[in-house]
Length: 491
Image 1 (cartoon, rainbow, N blue to C red):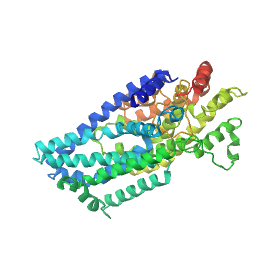
Image 2: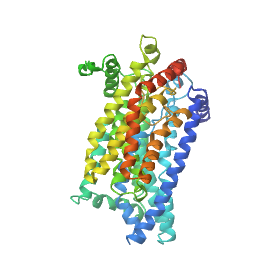
Image 3: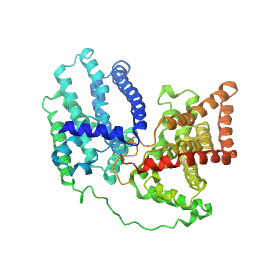
Image 4: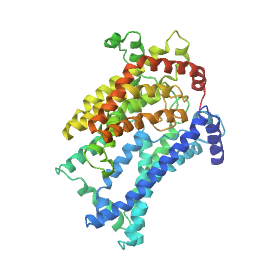
């Protein structure tokens, strides 16, 4: 039976309208997977060496102390990024497959997820060093790892149960953030109460059974929940919600463009997937802490400051903008049949990204705490994002051929939306060009000359905006019917 499911998945992948982009996506994600695997393996080896040699502490005790934060971060990270076990269930319900088999295969797919496997590349090297250098008993280390693996899979099934339960997951993330802050400022140390459990997975030969039982229990609950909702007129039915009408009259000053701006703002407010991208863009505001605090030694080079400035101010541009025009894919053919000018449509997207970038630059004013030069990097990055990257994002969007289903449970970055070789090549200048410009000015004259070159590039983007928009509009017209055809295809 599972052989049939695998065969259907394989055919679905190669016959979809996004097959070519899917292949490139797999190759691209493969490189990133290898990168993260290498970093996790290096982290496991480095954590042991640093704790043992530099801090002169027991590596197992230190790591076990902070595993509560690892568990919470893994859960929140999964909620934002991991795909739900959806395998085009609706067509299968009319075929001679039992519901139990369908759900078993769907949940089984999640068990092979990269989110589950990646943790092993940290704990395996760490455990090998515990045995070879720390002379730890092999059985105890093995049981400790079994307990941690069970917690990983418990998170996997818990994430499935928490899907679409925004309030609960935000509460978990908020509580852990508060506890982390209290721990950092030495008001309350939650690890004093959680460390004995994680340490007990190593010291006790029976405590590892607790996370195993929890994981099995969560699997059974998730299984029964999926089976109970596996009806066309129940769990798989499209949900209708009553929403309030909003005029958003303050946008009327933008003329005809206001119609599209209002539509985008309503889309963001009413759809989880769009709201998730906005949440991700807010998290980008904190990305600069890695660069301006000196937390990561590798990021202390001068060129990395402008890199941070681009990301801090461009979170919305990169998370929401990269999906233009896929956000409108459900009604894109209808919209193209109306008397709508591409210039007005593209201008609305451009203004939305510019306004969001401007607001992000203001919210990032907290970086003044690290010196006005740190905030200068953010401001210059915002100018470049508004003047150059906003156009690059729209340009790349012309080649987006994969629709977004706003009613699905897929996460904001869980599938292969908005990706192909052309969009990848057009995305490289967003980060490489400002870094190159800054490096030229910095090493040729001074850091301020580097900032000036990047800012001038952004200003030039504003100056030649009409010329660039003409080119982008022609590309959209050329790709119009290919895009409409692709958006009509079912994955």
